[in-house]
Length: 377
Image 1 (cartoon, rainbow, N blue to C red):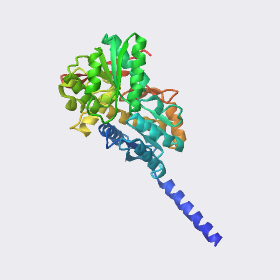
Image 2 (image 1 turned 180 degrees about the horizontal axis):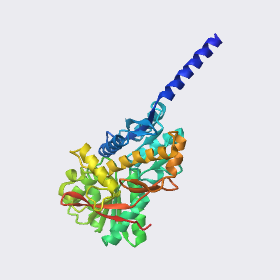
Image 3 (image 1 turned 90 degrees about the horizontal axis):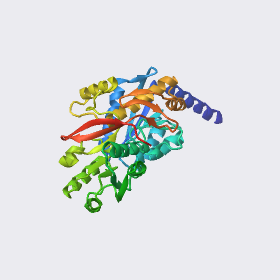
């Protein structure tokens, strides 16, 4: 009986090996918020990934097969999504995700499994801190916060700042802290720092208090939906100060939600926008391909980051000459001046992308790319 069992086990093992060998695909996992609070940004990033997949459908002679899981804008679901990608789908690398909190939750699973993960727009430093297998195609919040503070203080000449922070969001808390640190270091004064919780709809109490402190600028490191409501309520209360935010405000829906209240709003972003002057040939090509694939929807930086994350992983696979996760990880860490839609990317020692900070303003109801800036750290 023992010999029969051993023979059956050997046959099963051989069949499994034959199946693995015949699998002529590169299995690439994607986990993004496709429902819930961050769904709009997640969907744009997914469409960027899918456009890149159409552009470059193979690598090392293998078909690139995408396995997409919705993390539902929830930390627990993000961890569950990566567990599914690793355990069930057997992916060799992962793209994800929009939202730092989600990337941290999913990244813990990828790190334990030894599967390389490339974040799209997760900018909190903790996402990659101390991680061997976690990377990102975006810059980090200390850099972005310093960029916003530098632009406010030096380019706009603003000296007194107030902050309204979502205390339930790692992204919001972190970016507010980095803006405050840089603004004060430059010589500015922070006259008020007030909080709210994700999902709040009424900000009038905080805004009334902030208006009484007479700041020159209100910095709101919010996601676009809540940020637009904050601006609407601030203007209704008579606020005339400049309002600024971070990259999470980079969404075409902001003007639809905020209306005239978002006119003049300034936010930091990654260096890509359809309105930017002197666009690189790669960005021009991406914009043309996007408009052909999605004629009813404008591209934005999230779609560009999704595209760049996919291409960055394929570039690593190509340089590694293998789709082994350890080899991909080593190649990702060695990335230098990778030409992407959002500029040339070098992965630094903490696995974060180094690239300029873009500045966008809402003008005449339209997002307008107005400048690129090197932050004073």
